[in-house]
Image: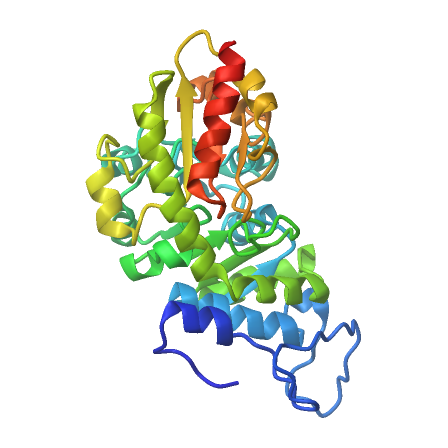
Length: 385
């Protein structure tokens, strides 16, 4: 495979991580669907659960190169990547500090499962580096952040957290799903481990469930040692699908981001909208920080209406934008986090994170922005009556 280490992101997306077709020299990667491989007189003993089939191996190179890491791994879901990583570095008696504002599934994993394993945890009270530092204990092994956060697009200072972790000789982990390496590369700021729900932007077409991890090789080896036993690998057909989808990652994310910035500004001016959460708005409390550590502001935003407007009725009135689970497909979707991504949290936990029942999360797609705006206005007028 040719090296594209010094190439631009679009070139890396298209060419790095292609599985070589040495027999027929096809223009795209072949799929190696075997679940059984030769074990004698070979350099690598391949097995799907070992994360090292040809398709797995080469796609990992694309992810690693995009994230500026030494290595990468591909999992069957974002939660498989998150749970395997956290359990690989945490054991009974260990402690982890987690950002309060994170994906509901991650918080649910911690609150429902960690006590069973004797793992201690603390959620921060805020997002400043001091909020993290005051939570560190003698047995703390990890700091976990997510920025921009799901669903309120809160921003954490990546470099400050990385430096804090290093000063205490603990590992830093980030969920980089919302930003993607097209917009944000946390390893460049000193973060140790980067996680993704590859179901989202990496897949980009709402037809793949996958997860990803990028880190230096010694951390990859630690996660692999547990991962091979937990069995959270992705099938080679889906790995092939993911590699195909990532070829357009750069162009998709940039097109969606352009739409999101325009729509965020339009929604902010709408008299029926109370608040818009988008780091690309100057009104966002961390606008300057986002501008410093991100190459753009992403394609996710959230908003809430003024009192008296029913968010569920609004979603039902949409015609073009889909009221749908998940995010980051080329099609625009909206949902209520209280009923979906953060439904596993208690009402009190959601309120503590600022997630109201009427909050709408908006994953902006690649449609014409004017068409999206018309759909929003029509649905709003129908809801108001």
